[in-house]
Amino acid sequence: MRKNLLALFLVFTFIAPFSAFGQMVTKKNSPAMKAAQEITAKQLSDYLYFVASDAMEGRDTPSRGLDVTAEFIKMNLSRWGFKPAGDNGTFFQKFALRRESIDTSATKLIVENTEFALNEDYFRLSGNAATGNVPLIFGGDGWMVKSKNIDALSGVDVKGKIVVVAGNRPDFSQQFMIPPPVGVTEADLKGTRGTDWADSVRNAQEKGAAGVIVIAPAQLMGFWEQAKQFLGRGSMYPEKLRADNVQAPNPMPVMLASPKVSNALYGATLPTSAGDLNKTGSLSAKSKIEILMTQNVVAIWEGSDKILKNEMVAIGAHYDHVGVNPNARGEDKIWNGADDDGSGTVAVLSIAEALAKSKVKPKRSILFVWHAGEEKGLWGSEYFTKFPTVDLSKVVTMLNIDMIGRSKKDGDTNPRNKELSGPNEIYVIGSKMMSTQLGEVTANVNNSYLKLNYNYKYDDPKDPNRFFFRSDHFHYAKNNIPIVFWFDGEHEDYHGAGDHPDKIDYVKMEKITRTIFLTMWEIADTKIRPAVDKQLPKELTNR
Image (cartoon, rainbow, N blue to C red):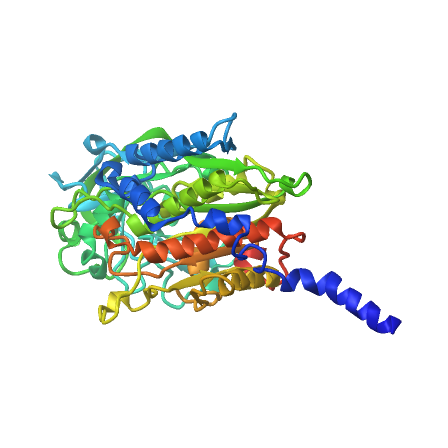
């Protein structure tokens, strides 16, 4: 009898807390359920029609529209009584962006007194210098690999001259650098950069070249117009994030040239060996540096338990999109980003409002973060997790909402909507990948409430789409914080001008937002924080 009593004691002590997940918050008259009813399709629609309006100009990072959206979020948080959790007692965590733009008047490519058109005949890849009028040297693919006894520039004097390298092989990389020579593998290139090998630009630079012209391959010419969108406007990155990683700028001018330039250099036939082209030319490149500011929006709703309130459940979304495309076909030049990620932005805002209206608080505190710059490379979440305004060790879970507003209609045969989730369906990513306990909480809350179709198709580090690695939760996961990511799937308007608020399924969005709200509350009230107990992808362990 004692043995049986001991067994029962162990069951209720260790098993019961887990089996109870999703049972308390979804009770009909629980404070959490009452609060969840405050989240409505009408409320979500009202907020989204503002956030995804043309007045916000696509919420690019940085932009006036993004700043206005941040002020709108801040205004509501302030009037609802949230605690600022950004910099210096504010709702904003500011971070600087270093933008390098091209000085078009001082950037030139000239061959034999013929000047070519910047961003039409060629693009500036890098550099801040002028060569003067100097000899032009053909350098093949330009590579040097000591272990293979390969050096395309061997025996050719390139010092003080412009080296022309050919990018006409099929494996020409997306980064517009010349690929390794035929017969050279990645294994051959292991080790410290430059000790055994040098790519075309580096090899030319180390041999004293004054500049480099990279001839674009034929397959790239089909995307020449699209290349203008990013090569034609310079570069930008968060200064504090990249300061330790960015190498000193290469002053040598490097240009990516079209066949119009190559025809002037050597005609239609590619030279068979490196050597003097018997022509002269000049390159000049100049950029302008600007420091611009943007921000994450950060707030805390303090928990009710005097001990557990020191821990936090984080919930977030990225409030940026991709801005305005003046070269877009048709009249619509503004990428409104209603689903991506206006839907997540206003879902998190509605969750905050529901908390503020509730007479009862969850036990743990709730950390709200609206991230900037997700579309540029997860800038905001990387910045927040590297320079947190709160103690990240106290964050027990991160819930990320990125696209929850679209649904596939019956009879939709558009192949671009093939993977779009249905009206009662949503993809759930990460909940089972990192933590058994978190997976149970997430599933149980849903199963005991609205019973959405939780599709775990992408909850796999081997997913070829790599959705787990493509939104803001990734940087929290890198910090050993278990995450859940809700996502409706790619669709015909993904990163397109047609992502408008009138195409959102607000009924679906209401159901998902209420379910996430209850999941958040359940995690906030559990005695034991979700543990990371799964074998993690290498991208999370190699940090």
